[in-house]
Image 1 (cartoon, rainbow, N blue to C red):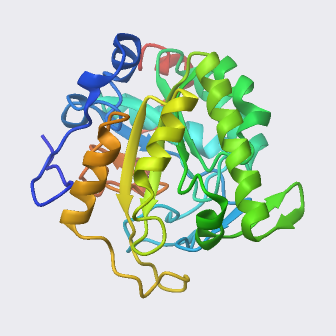
Image 2: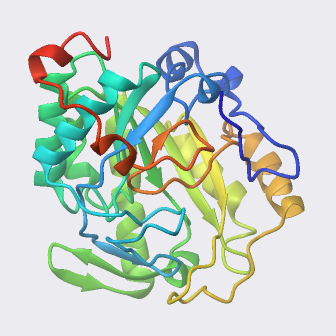
Length: 317
């Protein structure tokens, strides 16, 4: 059994309020540790770092591809090819019976590297037909690929929505890359918001469970959580995860203090009156492995005996 680290307030292990989910969404979330208030002690997750590129520069993000000493999104010890990722997944399911979900969450945006991401997911689906698959994205390219994700059986998608007011979004994002053209300021934030709404609505029409991540930045969007909750709930999102800013060296918000427990408790209460809240996020690396709250890495499984795809067919059922 793992220890549980929570950033909701001073109390450990504050669960996602999946009791407020619809019965269908709660059933789908039951074995996903990031979506279920009961599942994060019993089920493990695996992140495959196959997507290095990003189509958006968030002012709190600094991606690293050879990092072993930081525990945060956007970092990995190394990048994997789709083939290496599937091999690692086969090793993991053979030696980790509690592994219930495999996801792609970076270290860039998975849909900025759509070919690598979709190839990885397609091979995983063929090799592990019963495994839960998930993905985390900023949503910019989501309308282009929502149907493909659903067709591959990706049942859970997390979309990071930090603002639903372009004036606020302009302070969160440095630039948006729209097919090779960089868009800045409120225009870029408005474009991102339009794509996020379109993508979430399409996923929901296809029966995909959607979680919204919102990074809370004091003095920027810290009074905006309720408005984000109202908007994403109207799009049909199932769950929201308010994440306190983690100041990272080399970013615009490197010297901004992380919001304290009182602020996070208040924001989650306000947003929670509108949409169910996840309260046990541990801000995972792009190569995370194991239970939430454990500092497991993909490297931990690389030395395990190899497993053929034929032998792996019975796993993840």
